[in-house]
Length: 532
Image (cartoon, rainbow, N blue to C red; front, side, top):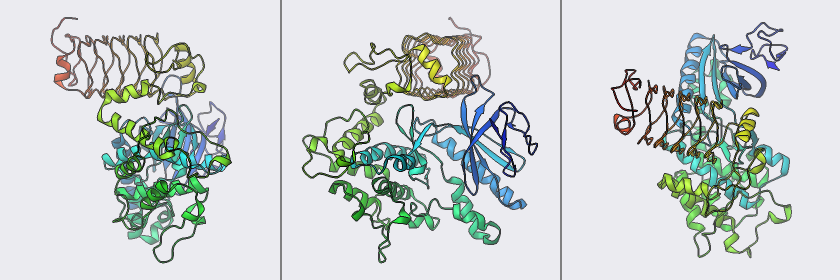
């Protein structure tokens, strides 16, 4: 189905290959590329649609966010244009983190603004609670373990989310990892103008400062700080434990604090941490995600707290959700959270140790996500056996709309001429893999290992390859224009005839690679004579 993006259209549903809406005459394919198939959600200032990118092979699925000013006065339109640009810049600053949706495109058509982002298939935490009931304590520890490092990453690039809540955290279907979506940069900026012009922009004010109940007082007063996200995550945990929205809970009339303790049954460690996350005063609240991570690790320290948690906790029966003071320390949720935090810290300190932790199976992809898996092969000779993807499994999964293959073992596979644009292969293993003539436009290969891989004539335009290991890789004739190769290892890589125009890398990196007069350097000029 083709879905019309005109909000005034009386019948937006159209035939799949229709080019023009039969009801209102609007163009159904934006920029001759993006075709909306259905609506995902609608707010006061933005509407999101599921779409197909017809400009790429395989027509990968994406999300279109339509920002439509509700007031058409010239200064409001200019304000909206500025806010649209700021949100795009904010999404660009986030980079290519494997658990944050990537910005793929943004543009203006008429008086409407569009952001195109990576599609994350899965259920939100709000949907999980509504379908299966409140989380138990161990599941909330798992949420903290996953979301806090994401918050720390956002804050490290000076981005405050401003709207953390269960509806904005998705459990990605392909690997069960949590992904944070819907960044509130536009809402925050709109609010400032709305206050200055209340008559003209009153319709925008309710979307200005995040979601009431989840946003702390300083954010409601237009002064958000990093600790504001900590508060919102704390309220999110209360919702997960109780199934109750903040508006359904009472507040202390003296302090203004949310009254939640009588509704949850968790251990004293988690109570203490949640209590400090939900402090009204910024002086008493954790100042950053890092401080919460440190508190989780400190409270879980003990002689048996080093036991590893290899998989996220699954939903348990209702009889096991209550806290038991006699529960063995080694199996406590805080112990599992602490081991996860130590894994996160070790990955942050050393890229190699992060790769090894994934190889050991701690972040493996569920077997049910693919077909054609080879259960006889393993990711590590020392670790437990793990299922590996086959070429057919990769092709089948991508054809079904899957785009996240982060951490997968794809060594020695024949992926020649495969078309995998915009796929996520963060920390993927491609040693000795045949990727000749493959279409890998805009793919994420951050920290991937391509040692000895054959990428001859592959199209890697705009690929993200920061810290990738391309030692001795064959890249002859490859299209690397506008690729991001910062800190990539190019020692012994064959770049003869490769196009590096606009690519992000240093002369020092190039000095370790093989080039010749056919190599196009980042400045667009041909390289010097060399031996290939």
